[in-house]
Image 1 (cartoon, rainbow, N blue to C red):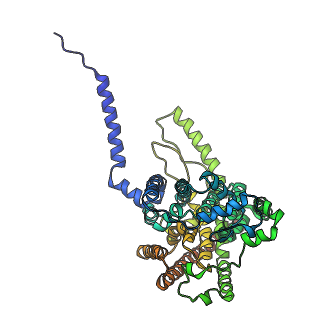
Image 2: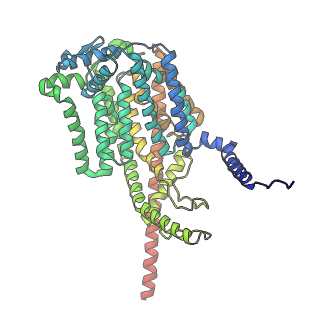
Amino acid sequence: MAPPRPNNRPVARRKKSTNLLQTLLDKYVNWNFVKYLIFEPAALPIVAVLIVLAEALINVLVINRVPYTEIDWVAYMQECEGFLNGTTNYALLRGDTGPLVYPAAFVYIYSGLYYITSHGTNVRLAQYIFAGIYLLQMSLVLRLYAKSRKVPPYVLVLSAFTSYRIHSIYVLRLFNDPVAILLLYASLNLFVDRRWTLGSVFFSLAVGVKMNILLFAPALFLFYLANLGLLKTALQLMICAVIQVLLGAPFLITHPVEYLRGSFDLGRIFEHKWTVNYRFLSREFFEQREFHLCLLGVHLLLLLCFAKPTWTFFMSYVRLRKVQDQLLPQIERKNREQQKEIQKKPKQLPKEPDEQLTGEQESFLKAFEKGLQKSTGKKAPQPAPVEPQSERYGINFDQCIQLALLPFFLSNFIGVACARSLHYQFYVWYFHTLPYLVWSTPYSLGVRYLLLGIIEYCWNTYPSTNVSSIALHLCHLVLLVGVARQIFSTMRLNATVKRQEAATLQNGQASTTTVTSKKLQ
């Protein structure tokens, strides 16, 4: 009997599959790739997906295994119930914890939750809604971190997974602070995407939930001016104001004084028993008006001290964005031309791009590169080398977002550090910005970890003590000094580079003049 015919097709397929599997294993299952995921900020888009998935599981476990603690949820529902019953006088909208003290957007959002949760009785459903808010906000925060490429992924993993207080504020307390912060981070993402009107709408909505969002306003005002100019800045401010008027219309039309006094009360005195940052002061001193005015003066003074660096950072950001707008069309055109050449002659290697940066562009990119090297230890965006597989040209400009984020985060941090009183739910005001701020200092890794660890300890000490309050202020001071050192060092470095470039240009012009005069002689 004749031997059976060999069937090579299945063998070939298995070989191809084996080769593909081996290629994937060689590429991703190795220590170098693990180190890349742990330490390289460029890997954050991959790690961010894992963080969000893990956080989803953690939040479900917290909701189902940790008892819910009632603090303000019932009071929120009572305040909204009064509005839903037809009351538009803020002086009459009250709950078990006192009068309504939040703007109109809060009333609308929590009125929606009132209906969704069966008049506030289905607390478990509300917890899952706040878990969704947490995951959405985390996604927005990680998107900003991924774009800036400043903080290593493992820092964000540790920060996200080890903060019991943050998870408690979201899914075990149901405070309104997370809602305001979610809208704030949505607006920041829109601003760095240059979607100005929509960003202004979300920022104003965030202010309409809770007034602490105004701590970002000084940086936003300068950001508007640097990017849009005076007239368009006025337009964006008008949009923010119109949103506030529309939100408060039912209350402004009927009882305007009560609404403004209740929702935007800048003189409200907090109770000393809940303070996290001033436990070491006596109640009498804590409630003195002069003490509050001193804190306000320090707040304004610090904002003035950082106004010039903020403006310089924003203008540098704008110039880099203009360079991006100039270069990206050229790069895309070169890639299209190159793709056509590859289709005609697939074996030929692509040529180098003919387009060159102007002298001004090269000068600025050089200054920015040196500044980033000093602050992060990594080089600024450079043209990507042409790889045989992709054979495309490109420049990564996302890292310039560092110039936008740091002033925003710093403006908010100054407001938190100078706050008259911090309650435990206020931790979300700046928790997600702390890794970024700490990594914007010249401190060693040990000092950075120590700062984050002590701050977490202070916010998890309940009730607060003299030691925890003093330690929190010391950490704020050390962090502020570190960020200031880094910012002003970058300012000096950029000024030096500009002087060198100006001197080089001047010498070049002088040499050209000398050569020309000799020719004329």
